[in-house]
Amino acid sequence: MLKSGTSASVSWLAAVLAISSILTGSLCTGDIRTSCSDRDILPRKLVDEIRGYAPVIKSIINAVVHGSERNKTYEDLALFVDTFGARYTGTAVLERSIDYMVQLLKRRRLDNVHTEPARVPRWVRGYEAAWMVSPRLHKLPILGLGYSAPTPRHGITAPILVVDSFEELHENRHKAIGKIVVFNQKFVSYDVTSKYRKRGPEEAAKAGAVAVLVRSVTPFSIATPHTGYTAFTERRFRIPSASITVEDAQLLKRMQDRGITPVVKLIMHNKDLPAVISRNTVAEITGREKPREVVIVSGHIDSWDVGQGAMDDGGGAFISWRALDVFRRLGLRPRRTVRSVLWTAEEVGTMGAEQYFADHADERNECINIAMESDMGTFKPKGLAFSGHSERARCVIAEVLSLFSDIDATELTIGADAPDLRKWIKAGFPVASLTTHNEKYFYFHHTEGDTMTVHDPKVLDLCTAMWAGVAYVLADLHDSLPRR
Image (cartoon, rainbow, N blue to C red; front, side, top):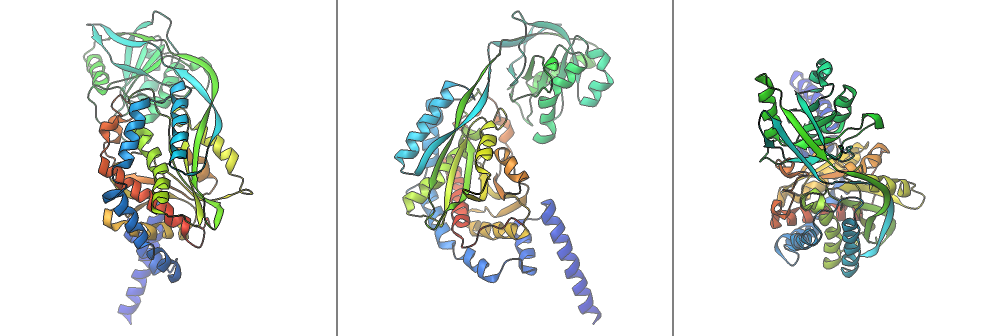
């Protein structure tokens, strides 16, 4: 009796811990599936239905990884980025690349190919350069930060103040007056460290700085600056701001620690131009039974104005429309509509996605079953990250992922990383993002190094197969994904 009671207590405690771990994202997929099974979250009929898709998933993987669709995602993406290069918001190049995609999607005979307008800002990089002019001459490679103010025509020359944190800036704010503040923050994670790029210039301006240089947000550097946008809540705090390399930030810090105050000359001739209209690009495989219920697969087509935008986010955009292409080529048409959306203007503030949400979140016309985005690199897939209020929905996703054991992509974590889908998450829609072995993602992020060289054709095939397979199952199940 005591042994039986102890086992029951342990089982009860394990269940409580399992629920807690699911909510915090600390369990692996197997643990979530075990928890779902132990507590009968999913009816046996639904589990059997999901497992019944194994032959379809196998056919998709075989076609994309080994068969007729092999290497096609890589070849299509390479042709695209080699033709257009970087596709910065507000430029004619981006709009030409969108025109190209519309024609390509129509040639691939996808359904309902069209674009939807979104008003976007125009910040244009001009000539920019920086030098340390004292105690010796040293060129500093830089990339201006989006929304930065320009310098006067002949630049700004000023002594620097290096700080490692916001706290150090505030402690030395009296020293920042008239200086070029250099943020030398260490890389902890993108979310933590990018705050210095996004908020640092305004914080330094409030302390009296005349310009800001921010150490690039990366864990690894080969003397390469990483760009990105910065944010100013008030125009009076808008000052010239640029990223510098990790190496140069550390150099300036070492000099300051020796009692030397380097002097830097900074020139930035960027401009603000009137807003223009860009477009989200849409294509579908129309559902055979429930065409007004939709599964969205997405990535963003715009990029920063450096490199080719092949990784961020060419890979995510191309596995999304290629998923539909695979369905058509294999003769697969799920119950619900699968819609590919290639967002515009993600890099400058997700304006394209926000406009799309405003236009489509009213479900009187259609019901979004789940929205998915790939925007953290298309390296070897691990699984999905999921955001949603329904424990049953999490269990469905975990069960679907179990179908991808052959390519070792069964991991489910909690908390989707989907910048363009933040409004959908906030509104309670189920949202998922692709997770990959992307440890090197921030080596190339927002740099000249974001090119096709980052990609491996076979790995892109694995991502395409998984993205297509997940979308197909979720679009074809008899019951919609629950929200509560």
